[in-house]
Amino acid sequence: MGAIAAVAIIVACILVFRQLGGSTEEPAEEAGVVTMICRDCGEVFKITYKDMGLEEHPDLDALQEKATGMACPKCGKKNTVVSVRCPRCGKPFAPPTDTSQIRDFKCPHCKKSPWKR
Image (cartoon, rainbow, N blue to C red; front, side, top):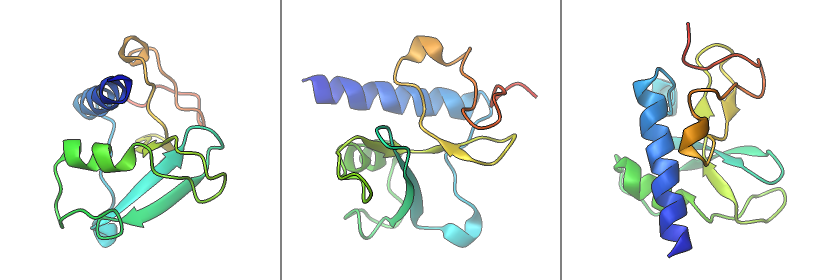
């Protein structure tokens, strides 16, 4: 039951990020490719929908469900999530797991709010 709650929180974070101006969308030249990040070691890696066993245009719930628990190619731990790209610096980061942190969250790279322009 805890895994379902974790997936629900991550999906909620991504939806709120999109509403506030963040993006989980990849550039058009990378259609069908998802940028993932490991919460343990910080490794950023790309994987195709096909390699995830997903259809060409999966919905966000299906994408998060497949992404949660994938093994990191660097450390092997199963603590990966779909990354969010900062609209300010363009670098990917892992969204906070606690939805109460979203408004005060700062990009770990540029240290600025990803949604305040």
